[in-house]
Length: 161
Image (cartoon, rainbow, N blue to C red; front, side, top):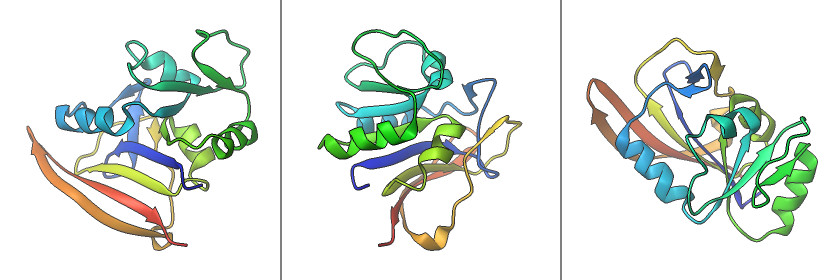
């Protein structure tokens, strides 16, 4: 789906988070995330939504959950992936999948792009980014940076057609 992308920061072993929190908080990477998703749709699971300090401004929140929850009226809730994908096909806007691990796993086969910040570090984690076949993607390094003791690079993966 051309309007559906993933954005994530992952460690050497694909680590995403622990106890529903990010493992690394790199200011430049958080700014990239904000710029990328500004005025866009962001798709997340219920736990990721609840882990946010507040609703992220200037973004349309879409939550996927099997639970019957009530959120603010301006937040879209889907209870299955097929309904979400049908919605994304009908709406000519950009959608960014922002987590968590199970949502990345459920949607990775449908995205056309992935913006991955690959952090050259490892950490204890309980959530991991799904494995994927790199041969199915064109990979381009957008930037290589250093923050405190951490080297990282940001890549964009575009699905080969």
